[in-house]
Image 1 (cartoon, helix red, strand yellow):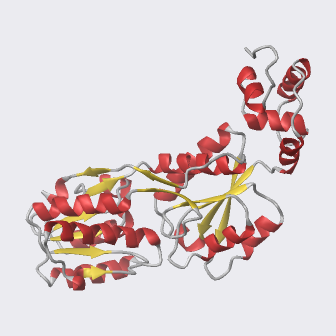
Image 2 (image 1 turned 135 degrees about the vertical axis):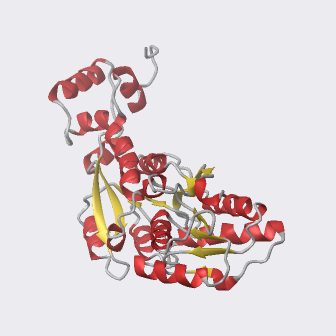
Image 3 (image 1 turned 45 degrees about the horizontal axis):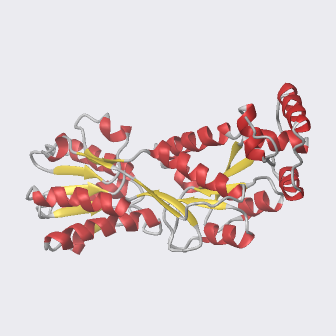
Length: 334
């Protein structure tokens, strides 16, 4: 119960009525989707307790759209990666609890017109950038606009709120385990190196070799592999080099490598070990289960949405959030 004489806040109203602060804001402003019965209950309560929202809070409530934008590069949709639907599920769960809706905006690194239109037309209260880039034009544009936003992935910009898994440490740990198993000649097949995540994964790979004093062969690092055809070509070249193990930088590339090796009747793990820096159903449901790093992608989405909502409400938000991981050793590296 509210103590007698205590100045009532929006947090107090929300807690006493068992609703979100967003619901209180919508009731006060008269805008936004909210049931009429709930609206009347909130208004009656604040009237009885003489609650007077400050001018700034009312202004913010009037200006809010109760939409969150999810910014995704158009070319990533064609990759059919399980990562993005899972992250979206986590984002949507947190957004729904605060009565926010999520809308998707597709962008091209060279064409940000859709993103500009969403911001200029005030269609969202904040945005989640689903992937960080080395030359990150979407992030630069969002920062310049002043709209609250968070990146799902690490950024070199110290002013950006960012949420990600600890990919460097995770990839260092998996690589170290493989090296300690005696697999001293390891190849890596990675995707677009403009994606910060691929650079972080390789950083962990290099750190593991440095920690153990084991040199790595730079010619066995294949980057910017963006299709099944190029993954197959990389596998052919690797097999000619007496390599002990191949690591795919993500689940999709690893699934391409696995398919190619199976087509060539390469026995796994007898003839070649295979591992992945990212796990998914693509690998767990394969005929040969693949050693991989497990991340909780839904939790990643939930955490990113929480950080963004803190920003939207003008609250203190964590600057850098790194989530944990698990290395799953499976049949492919026995």
